[in-house]
Image 1 (cartoon, helix red, strand yellow):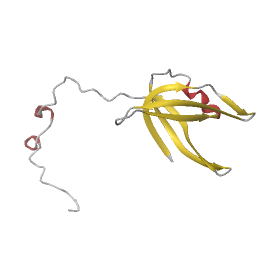
Image 2 (image 1 turned 120 degrees about the horizontal axis):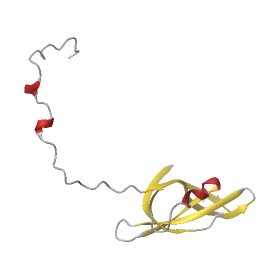
Image 3 (image 1 turned 90 degrees about the vertical axis):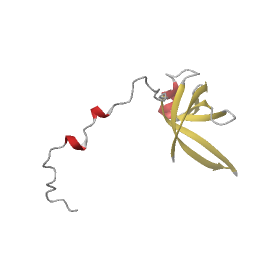
Image 4 (image 1 turned 135 degrees about the horizontal axis):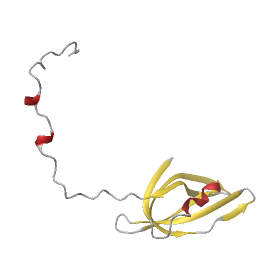
Length: 123
């Protein structure tokens, strides 16, 4: 399952080498929606650990992630496995330009008079 969320980078942690062949890195995203802010921890693994390097705490980012779960010794764990991070795109602000007027759009009166030939249309 693939998801995405936008928020402020709250904290990023150092890469941890778990085994000789596996490394992971965590970071926390502050999501301010609703009444209470949410601090959500994500995980990067292997070659993706460097994806967070170019962002500073306080930057607005969009995180693409997968929801992962597993069982170990009768306990259940859930990970939010990030696989892509990009700068958050701000919502387009309205401009001060006036809306286009009708003079930019052709009207039915502008069409040639011979538009009654509909050829071989099926309806």
